[in-house]
Length: 235
Ligand code: PRP
Ligand code: URA
Image 1 (tube, rainbow, N blue to C red):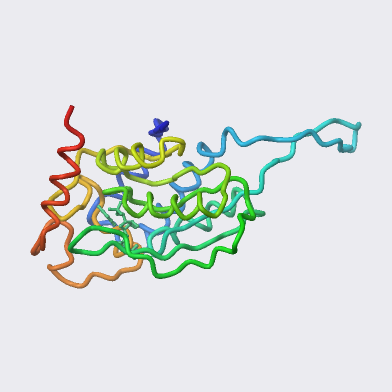
Image 2: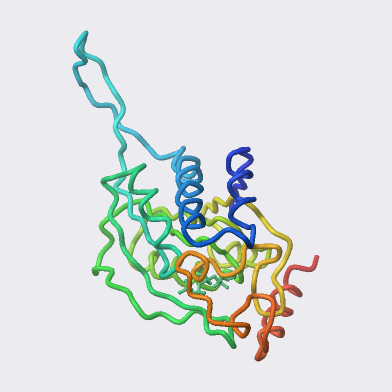
């Protein structure tokens, strides 16, 4: 499974501000959008084009037009902040939302919204989610898209943990993953370290107190889930 970690200095700079705990939701949303634009540009670098004859004001030429139909698949909630930037890059894309949240105790994804029609309407799917932590949400979404009939799938995330990359590699080795950074590890509550905290809460300003803080509060058994993922990573 090809993992593409951006080396662009603008990506590194914007990510530094995004990670900073002092960055408030308005600025955070702007940065999610700008980073998505830069990562999206990289992620779509290998999309196929077809020749199309056109006439410029000076002469006829054979120009290149984008060939595949592209679908954007934001995982709710946090993936929503990545949609507008992608639509600026590719305004003809279809947007198919998938609603998943991570159960706080098991860290497993729970599906709550899926309106995919019976058969795939696009050839290339870009799954949008800022955080690839255990990889459970991404893997479940990609399962849905493969059953749907998507021919090609790419995952675009801002930050990945090694545990999440390993999950995707095991379940979906044919999916390209584009990220701004590959971080160190997951903490006992399944949050990416150093990460940026909770991407949904930081975008939408929904901070519910110490119990929901990414480094604190009871772990309710999540530590064992994380230890299992980390054992799988050992050589
Ligand atoms: C976050 C994030 C991903 C998921 C990543 O969503 O946006 O969807 O966790 O974790 P995983 O790789 O371990 O599955 P969350 O469940 O917090 O839902 P939200 O976006 O509604 O806040
Ligand atoms: N979801 C987030 O928003 N952040 C993490 O670090 C892990 C999952």
